[in-house]
Amino acid sequence: MPADADAVRRLFEEHLASLGSAPDAELDADMADFTASHAGDANAFLLAVDSDQRLVGTGEVRDGEIRHIFVQPDFRGRGVARSLVRQLLRAASAVGQQDFRALLSRHNEYLRPVFQACGFLPTGLTPDHPKLRDYEILRLTRPQNCSWPVVVITGGSRGLGRKLVQHFAPDYNVVFGWWQSEAAALELAREQAALGHWVLPLRCDARDWKRMEFFADLAHAVAGPCQTLIHTTGTFSLKPLDEIDPATWQEELDSTVTAGFHGWRAFTGQLKSHPRSRVVFIGDSAAEQLRARRHSTAYYIGKHGLVLLARAIANEHQQSGLTCNVVSPGVLPNSIDLDQPGMKANVGFEEIAGVIDFLLSPAADAVSGSHLIASRGWNV
Image (cartoon, rainbow, N blue to C red; front, side):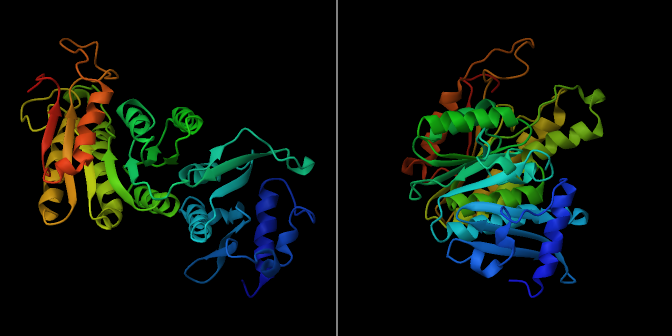
């Protein structure tokens, strides 16, 4: 608890003022006595301070509700609020709290991506209290069966990644990342919940190391240590080389091999904590074919790079139970270039999932550093 509680209250008042509100004696009674309000193992009140020990943010969890997350404006956008929510989830989860909720003002746009990055889902409900009708209820639930292995899928809201979430959800605790496709991610999470499956959607840009590091830490706090990492992301622009601008070039590289490296580095410790763990990179059937690619050149360079990265990981861990392989599909049903000459879907999502099933099985314990092409002989 802070030595100067008045500093916390002043920060709280500034936060409410930014939302056009003010402290309410009934709703904010817990701010009067921090110690009494946070008694109990699953309750906590946290402070964020800068290098000069100045108070820059606060947050609390009480009876499963994440409350009073606010950060001084000068410190927003630096991950402070995300860190506060993560620490609160970790503290309460460690003593058995399973369900969490948060109330988010419809005017508080800076906190919305924070809760998205932490896996909170909108419920469509508003609080019963008449003074809170301008708030929406968000919810996060931890897996009921924490003994199930954890599978993490980057880029899981659309295409192959989405099908992999659906494939593994009946038998694993699945954490999947999404970045821009909010509607698709929410639809997938609700679909799986209706089927009785637990999945956790976390908003994360896999190209950003800090976000991926946070993604891994949050996934561990909520679901447990990752046993299988499946990296699926990759931007395919279809632009010819002479028309690719530097930003597109960088995006194609970053979304493939750089994002794969970020995922590997972020989850290395968790993967190594298991006696048997798996890393699977989704490649491309043209990977390792060193011939001209006039369109999306950087994308193909990135896919080549994933094969080299997988083999480096496999070689480094050949005496452990960790394996790393690349699975490269042929033309999938969602390929954006199906209208190009010679392009026709020749492999299904479930067939790729089947290859990954094999790699996850004990039968594949000796398979590491391999590049498995599933294309029915196309493009080989």
